[in-house]
Structures are given as structure tokens and as C-alpha cells.
Length: 235
Image 1: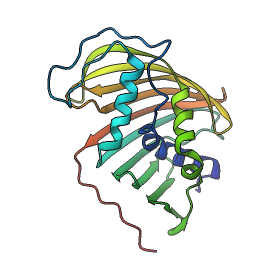
Image 2: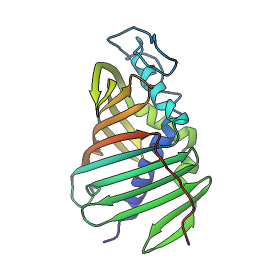
Image 3: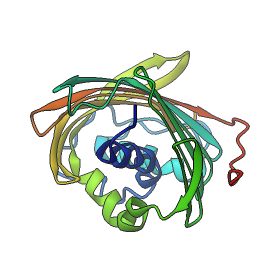
Image 4: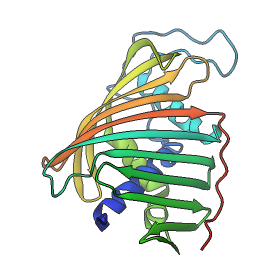
């Protein structure tokens, strides 16, 4: 079974969203932001405590990914809706060796495997049992505009409270998703856990719907200080 071109683009979009999140300058304080705490960090410069601006706190946490290399994110996706349109359930692993060195591999329950490597402006795609080199249109068209679009889709950011996730002390934030991407409207809700010791995202869970016809759930776990090396594939 081959993955259709629409879901290849979706998977690539998902791969660059974490990278684009590093530039979410639009995700800053403003109307609708709220917090349950106004305390400041009294520890080291890397420690994090919520301010009275939840939207800014979440934006700061996402932007810290820009200096968190190397790191890995592992996402589990479960889809729902029209079976002809829904993305197959599966797992996606994205490894960031540096800002311009990324390796993404996605496996699904129906046997569809997708793999891509991006090094600078060079992009490699594994399909049909072989690697090919090409351009990553989403990256070239994305940049600041793509990051801004993602940021604009996150609404009503709120601080929920302290919570331990995966054995790590974190601060939980919630938000809604509402906006257009890829020519279709996306809606839903999301939660992000920001580490108290490092101010970095450690987990995110989202429940989304696309164009009121299909959707799914996403569960992402972040790992830092991991041994990652991204090299061009053997052609």
C-alpha cells in the first residue's frame, strides 16, 4: 500500500511544525491569556515558574526548542472519521540533530512507512524502496509565515497547574486549536507540559478535527540530551 500525496504533505507538515515552533514570535502575551500563578523562578536561569501571562509562557517554552538540540520527539497518532480520508494510525519519530539536520520516520498500523531526511536546503525522501533527493516545499514556503500560521491557530492559552509527567515535574498548559492550514480548517484542543527544571516541552496531547470530516488524537513525548546523528542517505 502506498501513502497518497495528501498525507505525505501532512506528515511533512507535522515534521516541520516542531521546528517552526522555535520561531513562534506571535505566541506572546495578549487578550485571552491567563494564569493561576504569578511566581517567578528563584532557582537557576534554566528553571521555570509560571508568570501571569500563560500565552507568553507557552511561547517561551516552544521557542526554547531552538537551543535544545539534540532532541527527539515521538508521536503516537490515532485517527478517526472518514476511512478514505483519515491518516492511518501510527507512530512518528523526529530526531533533531541541529536546526537544519532533521530525520523523520513514520510507521503505520496498515504497513505504510514514510521516511525523510532534511539537511540544510537538501531533502531526501524514501519511497518505493529507494531514496530520492528533492526540495521540501513546505519548508521553503513555511519559514516565518508557517510558524506564524501555527501560532495563530493556538487560542485561549491557560495555565492549568503543576503536574508530574513521565517522572518529570512540569507545569501544564491548555489551549484550543482553531484556524486554517493547508486549505482546510483545523479545530480542537491541546495540552502542553513544560518542564519546571528546564522550561522545555516534555509532552503534548491534542485532539483535532479537520474540515469537520476527519480528525484524531496526537500524543507527543520529547527526549533531550540524546545521541543523534543525521547524515545523508546512501543513494
